[in-house]
Amino acid sequence: MLQSKLFSHTKKDVPKDEKSLNARLLIKAGYVNKLMAGAYSFLPLGLRVLNKVRKVIRSEMDKIGGQEILMPSLHPASNWKRSGGWDNIDVLFKVKSRTGRDYALGQSHEEVVTPLAKEMIQSYKDLPAAVYQIHWKFRDELRAKSGILRGRDFEMKDMYSFHENQADFDRFYQEVKKAYFRAYEKLGLTAKATEASGGSFTEKISYEFMVLTKAGEDDIFYCDNCDYCINVEIAKCEKGDKCPKCKKANLNKARASEVGNVFDLGQKYSKDFDLTFTDKKGKKKYPIMGCYGWGTTRTMGVLVEKFSDEKGIIWPEIAAPFDFHLIEISANNKQVKKEAGKLYVQLKEAGIEVLYDDRDDKKPGEKFADCDLIGIPLRVVISPKTLEQGKLEIKERQSDKVELVSKRALLERI
Image (cartoon, rainbow, N blue to C red):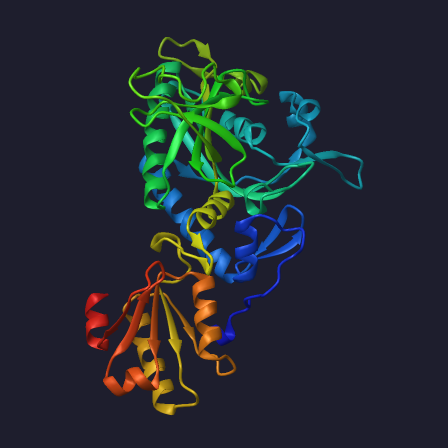
């Protein structure tokens, strides 16, 4: 991608009402644009990062047998009235058509996926089954805050599973839990699975996957010695208490942001929509359902909160919009422009994603500042000075160390 042709640009100023670090940096660096409180446009750079996050999640969901689908965002009110959500979920956006019919904008998809599954599941031979989507959600938050961590219009991966019995759900939950931890690790995040109430979804205990960050909206107690972790709101312990699970370490308290969750839905939605299957004895039964959420846009915000400094964003390689940021410092030096263009082509042919700063109207200091703000993992500079030495200047975003290497050494390293 030629930076001179990039649709978005870096900014010096951000909306005055934008307080969160993730939104301020993403807006300044040209990743997102704020339409209104709680709603952002994802620009070319932002969509590239979002696609990288989606790729990690898809890989792990596919490994455990999830099959990707895509369901409508516009739902008939009758489905939500059947589940009780129409009158009991206060964040539900309700829409009335010109014909007088009522609809809902999906804040979750239990009311759609259950009648869908009813058409696909008839026998125990059809179970277990798991389908997921990566799609936009809408919630009528009274106060959208924290940038893309908490919006009215946001994207989630939501997977729904169907099981013959509780034991099979419990088995699958453990597989999902491991898959989530693998995905978070790939993204450079350390997540903790915490117990929380099921909220409006179910009376059962749910599990939230929390990433420690000062920008989080929850407080948790956790143990360094084992995997015990619980949301402070339902905890019967205090900071400094002995861990109730391992009895060895004292509990720590931290601020955290929820990036994923698991709900044991039991048979609620199966019964609401009369979803049944025939078991091995020929009897009709309601399947156990599970719901597994993951905020994709929220994850992008958490990455920015966690991986940034006073200069800008520091993307982990797996989520970065590009692998290399190639900067040409030419001062109209034709040879520099020629060599930079040649390297750009060679890198692309090697399968490397490159953002090439070919802008002639920017001074070196501006280019370097934009590079740090955008946060691509590796900076490669070609200038009259490096050309004279037959070298390239490379620098990793998270490091202050600058190296001079030959083009051949760089290509071999790739």
